[in-house]
Image 1 (cartoon, rainbow, N blue to C red):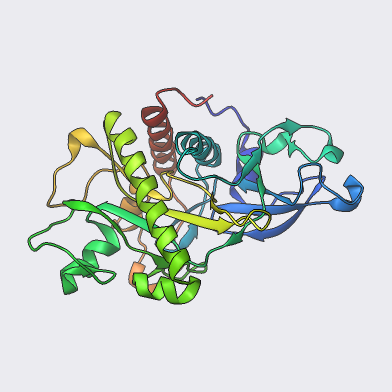
Image 2: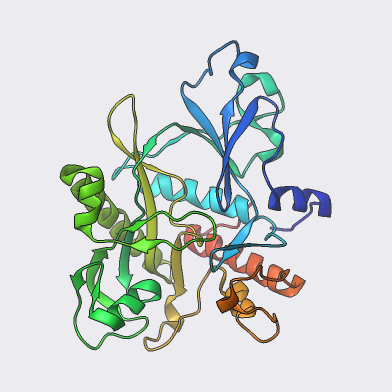
Length: 323
């Protein structure tokens, strides 16, 4: 996919919320912006029901800091890859997507043309207050916890594992959701049950492992290792069903490694923000992570290489170029 947009448009998608006629901005996360329908303009009701517009920006974050500039087309990759995965998982769990149909008419309640490809109209959910993490390989915060205690979120693991080791079976290692600039905190299953109830916690664990297992097999058939992934679920108020929401199985929410380069014992090459993280922690950036100061702007080369990595992830997993 060739980046044909001008600099002003790239900056718009990498910045804060947009002025979208027919929609009202209500929330911004690290990457996504959430909009509600402008109901007065729609005669008091949206034709698709109680919905929100979820727009994936090109913003990029690392080490709990928002960075600049953004990664062109990143939001399109995240949305299109999520949509592809939702289709692969449809028989396991319902998802929150209602429509991706775009229109230039602000009064019809569809996706505004300006954000077509990076936006989804989704049903409004009552989100569970936990990040549902599945791990099939040991790395990241799970590795750090294992090195200290031999466990991950209270689950004992075999001795002798190293960075990148494949686990005997996938494990559910939930976490609390962090605000901007703060860290997610791994928690036990018992803590999740205390927060959401035992039945809901068991259901979240079952669905998380089922989604990971299906996705791990699909990715492996395409020469990609899915090391771990973070999912979010909510309850549909209209039906009471547990629904898969937010993004799913993207390079922002998952660790994807090239299978032919997998070698336990050290950090693995990955299809995500690896170039960003490597540069930030290198002498070239001049940034002191321990001081928790604002990171410097990313060099053009790092931005371009990161963009290429996101596009490669999409193409490897789906078997088609991003159009």
